[in-house]
Image 1 (cartoon, rainbow, N blue to C red):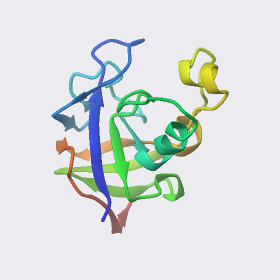
Image 2: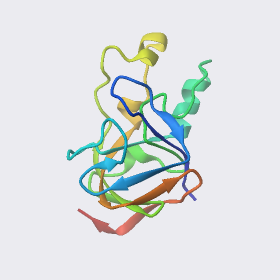
Image 3: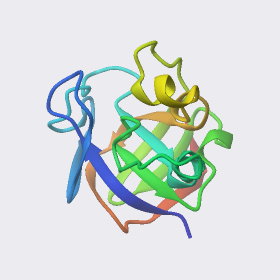
Length: 147
């Protein structure tokens, strides 16, 4: 079963996200209190913890939020989900809007290692139904629904 290993936010742009006990997701906004919240297609970022493990294996000490992810997961290959996939995460319902992203040039991890996993293994979503997400919550693909 796929689950959430951590949830993170950053109150100001340009700062690392940090783990919090829970995040509240709101339709039209994304993560309440996060500097990147807004009415756009990348309201919530998700990254598999297994991807972070590959970077840890290279000798890096990494913590939840270091890749600017809002939701760190385990047990689901996010990058293979098609755009439009509906994900039940905690009490919230998300719709996948983007797979990966272009890594910006001043990415600290990319500068240190020459590689960053967020551009190839992270995904983005919008909030379809608001709710709360905590570490340990289930992540489920809603196969009956796509947008």
